[in-house]
Image (cartoon, rainbow, N blue to C red; front, side, top):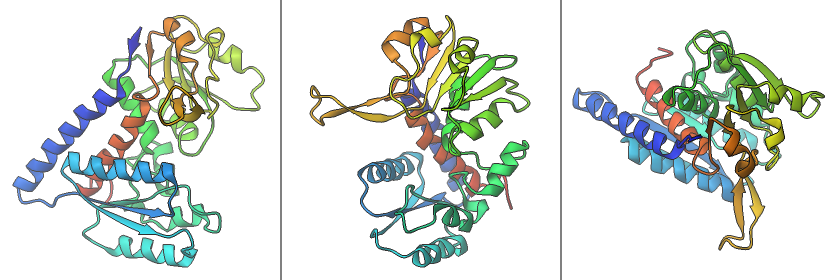
Length: 291
C-alpha cells in the first residue's frame, strides 16, 4: 500500500511555483497578487483563509485580506467584488464560503469576473472545464488529478466511482476524470444510489466526497483499488487537546490494507486544495487562460 502524501506533494509544488514567480519578477514581470474576502468569524473559514495567506507567502505572492462583519449587506459585498474586478493589480480573488444566510452565494459567485475566479466556481469556468477548454478548475478536483498524476496512478480505462455530487467536488471531478487524456469510465453515486456498494466493489479508483465520516467500509472496496478521501469532518475525541479529530469519509484503518494507494486525513487532499488555488493564481497572473 502506498500512502499518498498530499502535504509533501503540495510543498514540492509550492516550491516550484516560488521558483517560477522569482523568474517572472527577475524578468521585470509583476508579482502575482491574490485577494480574499472573509465575512464574519466562522472558525473554519478563518483557518482556511489564514492558510491561504500563508501559502501566498510561501509562493512569493502578494496577498490582500478584506474582512467584513457578518451583518454586511449583499449589496455592500457585491460592491466590494466589483472593486476587485476593476483593480488591475489584483490577479485573482476568492470569496470565502459559506456566506451568511441573508446573502445569496450564487449571486456573489456570478458577480466575480470569471478571469479572476481562481476558485473556479463561476459558471463560465465550470462550463469551459466541462467541455475541455482551458479554465480555472475548482481547486479540490484539480488537486486530486495532480496527486493521481504525480503518483503515476493509471486512469486510462479505469473505472472510477465518485461518492458525492456537490458542485465543488463531485460534479467537476466526474467531468475531469472522463476528459480525454484522463480517460476513466466514471460512475457518480449519491444518497439515492441503490447499488452503491456494488458500484464501489467494481471500482479501480474511488473518490469519496460524501461528507459522512468513515462511510466507505472495507467490504465496499476491492483489493488494489486507489482510494482518495476528500472528507474532513470534526468528530469528538477526548484524547485530543482540541476535543476533536478530523475524520475522512473512508474507514482508513480497515480500508488501507486493501488499497494500492490511499490518501490520509489530514495530510492528503486538503493541502493540495490550497496549493491548486496558488497554481490558479499563477495562471491568472500569466493570463494563461484569458486575456
